[in-house]
Length: 332
Length: 158
Image 1 (cartoon, rainbow over the protein chains, first blue to last red):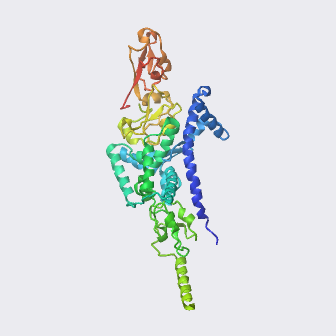
Image 2 (image 1 turned 90 degrees about the vertical axis):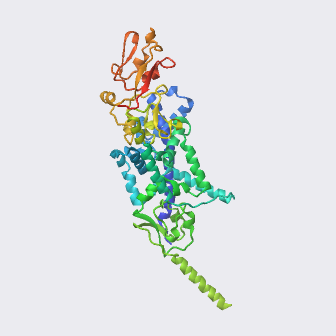
Image 3 (image 1 turned 180 degrees about the vertical axis):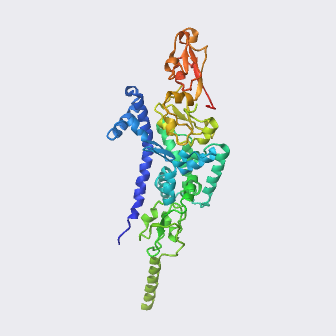
């Protein structure tokens, strides 16, 4: 059978996630390198700083002629960053700033235009494909699977998915009341970028690391990928924006054989087996990669199909089983 | 002290999204970030301690700030003098060497805005003028410990 290319999307996604994460680690080193260049005093650097300088020089020298200036093209984190002169921001940053300042600052709002357009088309793609926290959370999820195999009792509580919309709403109201951008303190992608910068360039992790470690423990002990599923305000915003996304994963009933691997592999506890994708799907494509019959693939559709029952392959298989059982009974 | 071009303190807190880009662009590594010591609202917001590392008025942080919490200000003398108001330098005449009769003048030499922010009198005694933007280069360069010239932060920054 000719298999769909879409099952390779998961590998591509992991490549992008690791690239984003590595870039976030590299950027503070670039910053240090720039400051060393700006000070024009290589001889006065400590041996550790010289190591950073030399490493960064060998990394950038083949590509850049004036690294002190040119490295400014890449600044910030996924929360808000500059990418070759293009300023990009997380839509949640816009929401929190607008609610805290009670004023719309258009140059800032426009920086979220591209992410918002992408989200309207692809849904919660940021969560699955870019978010540096997802990278850690998925590794953490694998760790959880290992621990479960090793026999450690790990509980998997289910909560109400709508909890995260509540977090988004309460956070926005609290930001407006206190006049401070509070989401930045509890939004993992923002925390990660910042904490990596602190660890590399400032010296020592900040308070956000504690919060992030707590969410990791929450995922491990209370609920699988629980923070993204139930608490993340950014995930809530992306889910709302991507409710009527144009591209969505859909099940082909005629191919589905009801093996339920998709439901097992889905970290967001969705129900691809019975057409239950909804607005929360983060397009991680793990279900596409795992599907043995290529029944799942991206389709151009604005709404999910209603539950279409068991897969047809499964029905055929069951009929054949029944027939052969009958034959066996007759033969006896 | 907030980085140059910051809005008044309440407005700054409401607009800053704690992205840390100002610190990341700062060529002098002057911009540091608050932990919990100053309350939850100012967690991860930028500050400058001039005695440790002072602002060199390169104005890159204002350009890179996405939300306008730090106003974008051109790196021109008039624009900087008109718009930057981080604080105001104040001299302790009992500590200052020049005022004690030993010619020093280090702060006046460090000042990036001579005769706008600071002029010198007899024996190079520093006289801070109204044009002082509070960059803190004088405080950083002062050879006295504790420094005899200090930048008092301006929270209104008007």
